[in-house]
Length: 79
Image (cartoon, rainbow, N blue to C red; front, side, top):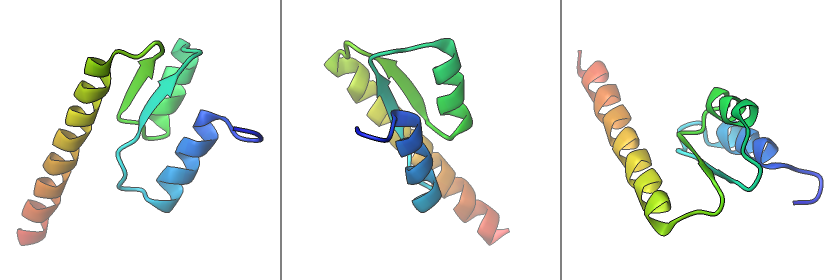
């Protein structure tokens, strides 16, 4: 991605669509980049090479988190 790295894209996504669930997939994993991804709002961080099962699990986890957040917001609004 000329001019942007994955963390830049993550920032843009979270700024424009703050309720989005984002999974970071990287070919250059480091503890620092994993911490940064979480700080910026990523729901998961996967290192390449990626096994299909890892992507499926991350997507399922993201959907579960989203459903939990929506239920929580609905219950809070009812209170």
